[in-house]
Length: 381
Ligand SMILES: Cc1cc2nc3c(=O)[nH]c(=O)nc-3n(C[C@H](O)[C@H](O)[C@H](O)COP(=O)(O)OP(=O)(O)OC[C@H]3O[C@@H](n4cnc5c(N)ncnc54)[C@H](O)[C@@H]3O)c2cc1C
Ligand SMILES: *[C@@H]1O[C@H](CO)[C@@H](O)[C@H](O)[C@H]1NC(C)=O
Image (cartoon, rainbow, N blue to C red; front, side, top):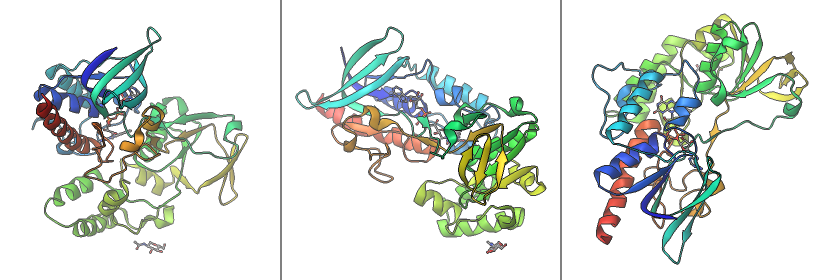
C-alpha cells in the first residue's frame, strides 16, 4: 500500500503534460500505465503513414513549443522524439504494466483508493491519493459497430488502431468503414498499395485541405466562427467543387462551428478525394448486413470482400474502473460538464484530455488542473 498526493491514470500526452505541470509546482505524483511504454497510442496503435493533422503551433505540450526549425506538420517519428525529450527533460517515470481496475473515494479517509493490476507479477497493488487525475484517453479502446452477420464474416476484420499499412492487402478487395480522418487516410494508403478499395460513407462530412484548416484555426483568433466557416467553405468549393455526385454530402453546419458544437472534426484530405473522383476508390452506402464473405449494402447490392477495416472510432473506458464516475463523467465515459469546465470533478477528481480538442486541449486541461490542485495542496500544507 502506498500513499501519494496525486495519482495519474495513463501515460499518454495528457498524463505526461500533467506530470510536467505538477513537477514545476513541486507536487508529488505517481503515474500508472497499463502498457510497457509512455505514449502507447502513438507507439503501438497508429498506422505507419500518420503524421500530425494539425500545424505544430496547435500540437505542443505545456512549456515545450516546437522549434521554429521544425516542419509545420510533424511526422509521427518526429512527434515521438519530441515526447521522448519531454519525458527526459521533466524526468517523468511512469510505472508500467499497471492496469488500473478500480478507483473509488474512501469517505472515511477522504482519499481516493486505487487498485492496479500489476501484469508482470500478477499482484494487485493498492494506492491512496488526495487527488485522482483520469488521463486514460478518449481513445482507450477501438469501437466496432454491431452489424448483423459480422460474426460469420470469413475474411479479415481489423480496427483502424491495429492497421499499419496496405502492404499485405495488395490485389485484395478491402472495405473501409467510416469516413473520418483515419478512414479516409487508410483508404488512400490501401489504394496506394494496389488494394481494390471501397469506403462506406454514411453521413455528411466536410473535406478540407491541411492548409485550409490551418488558415481557419489562425483566423479564429480574429474573426467569428461564422465568418471563418464562410471563408473556408468558399475555398473548399473552389478546390473540390460539389462532391455530392461522388456520394460525399456537405453537413448543414460549417466545419468549425460543427467542431465546436459536436466535437466532430472536418476530414483533412491527404489525396483521397482525387482517388474517389477518378474511381480508384469506390464510395458505397451504409451496410445493412453481412452474408458470409459478402457485404450487403443499403441499396441491396452485395459485394465480396477479403478484409474490412473499421475506422469507426474509439470509446473511453473510464466507467469500467472509476466506480464514482458520476463525480465527473457520464455513462459514456466522457465529461458531464461542457468545455471549459469539463476537467473538474468533485472530491479532488479531475480529467485531462477529454475535450475532443487534441493536443492543444490537453495542454489547456493540464495547466488548469495543476493550478487547481496546487491551490488546494498548498492551502493544506
Ligand atoms: C490516429 C490518431 C491521430 C491523431 N492525431 C492528432 C493530431 O494530429 N493532433 C492532435 O492534437 N491530436 C491528435 N489525436 C488526438 C489524440 O487523442 C491525442 O493526440 C493524444 O494521443 C491523446 O492523449 P491522451 O493522453 O489523452 O490519451 P492516450 O494517448 O490514449 O493515452 C492514454 C494512456 O492511458 C493508458 N490507459 C488507459 N486505460 C488505463 C488503465 N485502466 N490503467 C492504466 N493505464 C491506462 C493507455 O494505455 C494510454 O497509454 C489523434 C488521435 C488518433 C487516434
Ligand atoms: C451539390 O449538388 C447537389 C445536386 O447534385 C445539390 O442538391 C446540392 O445543393 C449542391 N450543394 C451545394 C453546397 O451547392
